[in-house]
Length: 251
Image 1 (spheres, one colour):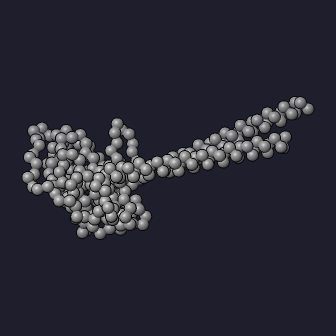
Image 2 (cartoon, rainbow, N blue to C red; image 1 turned 135 degrees about the vertical axis):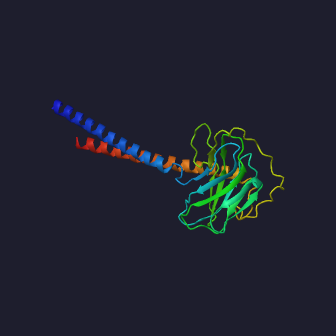
Image 3 (spheres, rainbow, N blue to C red; image 1 turned 45 degrees about the vertical axis):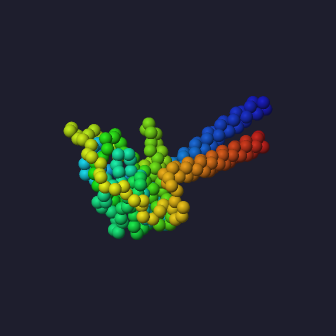
């Protein structure tokens, strides 16, 4: 009788260990799915150059902002130029039909009739001369026809990944004999007359405001993820407790 009871206990222990192992794998799978869902958006903004060298002159910069809305099209892009490129040193080369470029105090705005939903915004500009730097970041704010704004303004440091990276252009060393040309003597650009990023009371520092909102949204997303993970773990614990009680009842 004792041997039979001992054998039954061993069988129950083995079954319990197997069940816990399976539940553990299921939990890990759920967490992996949650991690993927919580990752950065697939859409992004990019920049390429016809001559990506420091101090290169009359360089064409091509930009692509991927559409990420299922219900609205991109209507405007606002770009903050990196130090060393003045707004009056930029001219529009190619853009969607009827889109126009307007200089702003810290860069430029380009926009026009909203693009079709799901259509990427592609345009190019000509820069009089690139600065003597190793890389250039072009912080970009995308405005959709429904008022939604996507902010690609984070600049990664030390190789770290960020959720909303700004378009970054890596530059090669300057060509032998290249020199910095004299800055333009044209008057400073007037404030943009293009549609504002927000319908009313546009912030005086849109990039700083965007950073604050991005931080707030990130905190909210983190809280949601933690709640879901906690719910999954509670369900796993409840299932395990129910199975153990059921096994003991049969014994």
